[in-house]
Image (cartoon, rainbow over all chains, first blue to last red; front, side, top):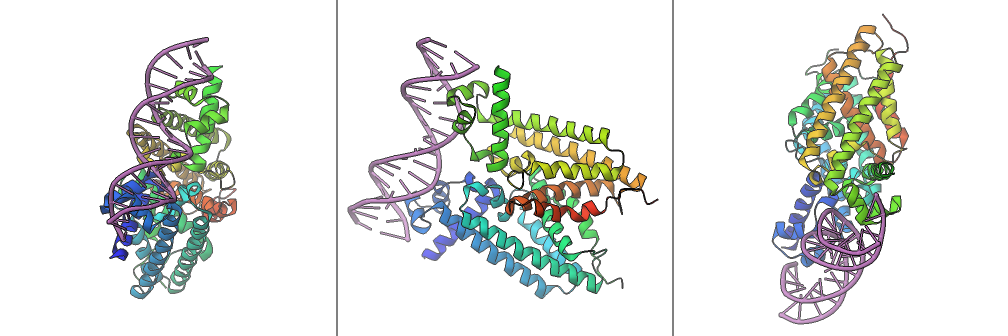
Length: 193
Length: 193
DNA sequence: GTCTATAGAAAGATAGAC
DNA sequence: GTCTATCTTTCTATAGAC
């Protein structure tokens, strides 16, 4: 069951990176978490740089999949935007964890350039997706006051990530909700047009 | 000149914390930066926890002073808000450094609870100040479409910090500007009322 | 205040047996 | 795939001379 072991290692590493930063956990921690020895962890991920690449790849895939699911399950721009907010809200774990992208961005200097590049690709993917949501929201009239969709998309991602930080600073979901309240308020249940 | 040495150590430590995270630099780095030995650094800051407290205290004082200066130098809500955006923009160093509050929030688990608490106090101070700016901007008519000043304040701090992260992710001032464009666009040079 | 010297712990990583 | 054993480096921190 080597794949399960690898998955278990990545699950722990992702959670640890999001809770304590990429420098905040060690191979010893990973080994203890899954019940093996340090040297065995190196069998699965020779270096910590390898681990960081694997984590970022999986994160990109997961989020892209989550976005696709939102498109499938929600019709209007407003509903899709609210669903994205909900995804970030859930990722907070009540203020205990950041999203991996924020965590990795803060720990940038400890990561291989390959991951820095992947962060850029990930952000571009997400901004583009959000932009389409705003365009839809403007067309179907469910998102209020949409001016420039590209600008809205950039600002929205910054707001969501900033709200993550804010919530973590005070370890409180309420802080996240307060920071995103105005954005959520622009989402109408039914078209006004 | 012990005070100068202490200041030099703090200057380097703050820059390093903002560029590489609080776990991303060591006493050896500090010693080399100011031209002394590791043990001598411990004379000024016995533990790294002590150092983190000193950095956070100074940061709070500095930012509070910057806000006061904005109040002195800018009359309208819009001008004050634009000045705050400019402060955050300058702190980026072209995408190389985060503000200390964001850096410390990400490295939370490595810091003493005292600093965690000080981060909360700092954020409250800043949110309150931003709230007053929005109230002013609504009264003098220079900031467009102000709904709830407390909500605007929370969202603005989250947006500024998120824009910091975004800019750092791509090491680009332009990314910061794009993320804050919509906020800046709400600031009018002259009252519309 | 700054130095040399050193302790003790923990980090990332590798070699080789099983 | 996992183990024991070990290496090397780096980290925070302290003792004591100057």
